[in-house]
Each structure stands twice: as C-alpha cells, then as structure tokens.
Amino acid sequence: MSPCRVAACLTALVAMCFAPSPVRSLDLNKLYGHHTKRSEYCHPYEPFKCPVDGNCISIQYLCDGAPDCIDGYDEDSKLCTAAKRPPVEETASFLQSLIASHGPNYLEKLFGSKARDALEPLGGVEKVAIALSESQTIEDFGAALHLMRSDLEHLRSVFMAVENGDLGMLKSLGIKDNELGDVKFFLEKLVNTGFLD
Image (cartoon, rainbow, N blue to C red; front, side, top):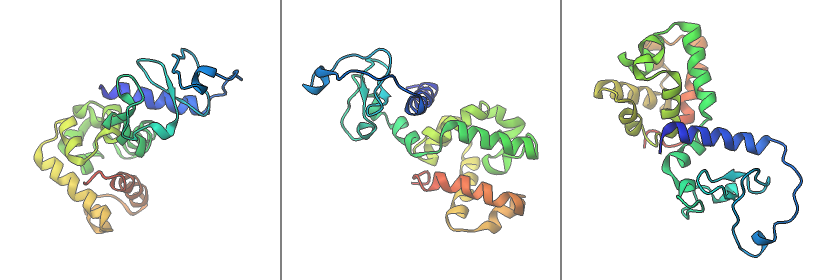
C-alpha cells in the first residue's frame, strides 16, 4: 500500500469525522447484519470508509485484528501505526517550521547528511512526514528513506537521548535551549508509539 494512499485515507478520515453529515433514515440492512455499499457519506457512528468497497465501519474496528474492509485495509500495518502517531500534516508542519526558522540544513542534526536542502535528498518534507507516521520502527523508517547505517544509528542515539532525558546530547547537536522543548516534545511522541522498538 502506497504511503500517499494511507496518508490520503487518514486525511479523509479526519475530514469525515468532523464534517457535518446529513440526517439519514435507519438502514435496516445494517440492523439485520446485511452489509450494503455506501457511496457517499458515512454515519458519524461509522465514520471510516473502506477505500475499495465503500463500506463504512466504526473506528473501534480499525486495527482490531479482524479485517472489515474487503481488502483488509482497516488492518494494514501502516494505517495502524499512523493511527497512533501525530497526523502527517502536523509532522510536516513541524519539520517545515524548523527549516523555515533555522535554515534548509537544520534537520541534518537529526536525520544526517541526507537531510540537507530542506530534506530534498530524502524526498522532501511530506515524504519524511509520511515515513515518520507510517514506519512502525526506526528500522522501518531507515529502510523507507534509504538512510545510511551511520545516519540511522545517529538518529537512534538522538531518540535514545530523548527517551532517557539526556538533553545534553541534543544541545551537543547544536539544538538551542529555546528549541529543546519543541524538538523533545515531537520526538517523544514517536518514542511513545514504539518507534524505537
């Protein structure tokens, strides 16, 4: 499954959850256990629309170990990982703000030499944000972006410093005191969702 498809579905899910939905009559087929294909809107109590068959399912059935979409998309490992992580848009915005504030090579401090020129050698900010959202572990992230082993180990040491509360390590990378809180907060979100496992 392509990273853009997962990101698009997550964006659509968020939009569906907060978009006003029309009042609908009771679907008796659903009441009696018959699934029907819904082509337009999902009810608020079943806001996730399967991309292939169009069936709507409850959020509680996402990543529950039992496929509810005909293609099993609701159990896709990338989707399930992304559901625990900050939204792709939030991650991309944070990375972009660091670049805008500190220059196009600032993220080299975290991701290594391939992070030059506003992450262009890694595919750009959006690709990195999607990889951070969908990659279950740091190893998966390294593979998705073809990071060199040395850059991956550097990134692992940054995350371990955050996990262990070693702000001195982040300072040694040139991250200023006024930036530490934001960088630490962002990295902790990934650590707390199993990125280092």
